[in-house]
Length: 213
Ligand SMILES: C[S@@+](CC[C@H](N)C(=O)[O-])C[C@H]1O[C@@H](n2cnc3c(N)ncnc32)[C@H](O)[C@@H]1O
Image 1: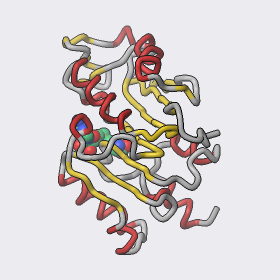
Image 2 (image 1 turned 180 degrees about the vertical axis):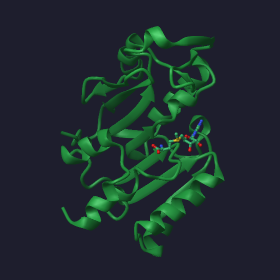
Image 3 (image 1 turned 30 degrees about the vertical axis):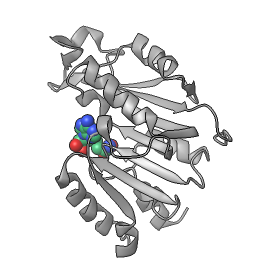
């Protein structure tokens, strides 16, 4: 891997890097990053996927993305090639089933309550093309149950003093079944000792050519 390629991965979520290194994300048609923020998970796919879309409800996110991509040395043409869509996952103005890969990294735990969580999750899942991958990292209660203060509606005060919507171990297992998703990996949770827990879903939608390994 060249230094330039490594640069493009430096800010990428390590569990997404894991999927890239496993060769599951080669030659993609369309990648959609929902709640893309400054787009740290997208540089690897620019020029590799046919279409790269960043969705976020905050215009400032796209300004930060422009700066980050410029600093990475992405050409003006490459930067302009990333489609910016202003909006929320739950009512995204994108065609259902358009994405071979949907990235939903550190977004779902901003849900205000269980209904909003479900709307966000189902909205993101609806974008996955048949045979495509849904990659999500979200805060969970796994391993930190004793340090949580319930705030109602599925939200908690965490030991790191943030307030998040949390999914528990059961929900992490049940949601993929409710969506009709296949698990490409078992649910993995990273517990940041005494602070928070982040769980990872790597799911595949049924149908299509099922080219993901
Ligand atoms: C912690 S940042 C994560 C950014 C990026 N995914 C990453 O991994 O660095 C959360 C992002 O989710 C966006 N967001 C929050 N609620 C959202 C929603 N309902 N739909 C889409 N994006 C949302 C925020 O604007 C913010 O940019």
